[in-house]
Length: 186
Image (cartoon, rainbow, N blue to C red; front, side):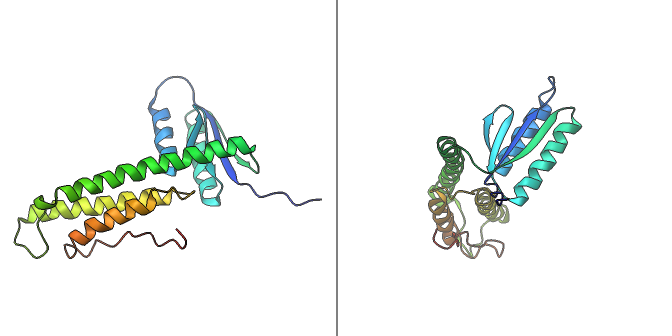
């Protein structure tokens, strides 16, 4: 018997009972957090990993707890055109997130004059607000990077821009660490 090919994609198909939108919005948010691309109002796809399969299993259980039906389907092959479309959508979604993050980091840099420099006697609240803004940029980058399964091209530019923000504020807090992309060959 020939060996079974390994799955390359996961598809979650679900149907929630008609009625309240709370469950639908919760499902949409959960899938977005995972980085899934929605194929139809009741199906989404992700590249296969065991961790993502487990996450989708949990979502399927939630759907069933709300009286719906859900299936997690490991897929070994998609027709070439379909796979290209799904890949392109996933990459475009991450690219849009990186672009928005980069723009927020550029806004921080444009407001450089408003931020207290390291070692200044600026108001503690102003320093804390600046520190929190930088930490938030770093966290957003890490969250996007976690769901960037297909290496969207905007990752490096976003990391470089955030590092420029950190260089500007170097020394404000030990919590701030460089976000420079350390993925080999990236």
